[in-house]
Length: 169
Image (cartoon, rainbow, N blue to C red; front, top):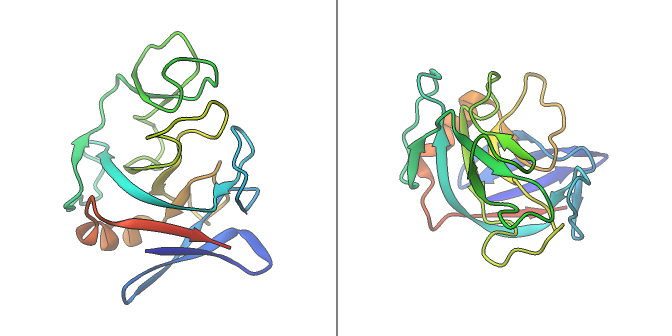
């Protein structure tokens, strides 16, 4: 799977997977090889897909061969740079800064954790890089890759733990 930024539109991209080509949103700062926490950029990288989480009763069909579970109200993701659980899932409430994974909007109706800065974490190198559902109109993300809900549903059945996403400029 390849994601390429659109020339002249760094926060907008195209995702290709076999014969499928679909529009996607990227980080507000475009794609970067020097990803840092809070920079709003999508990392220029090859990443495996770790697992998927989905919001119960979201209405989005979740058929995938990725490891998968339903998102719970206690699910969070630590984005506190100097915390020992930086860029890891945490249980809410959490003392340090953590993103709530069960959201009121549709963004994390399906959320696929990408292997950015997870296996060998470096403090400040960026956290919470996901493949998730885009907001209407595809506005920029905080550094993730986001697809329309219908495209996410089309793509999910083909994804496995062996799938790699390659983000290029």
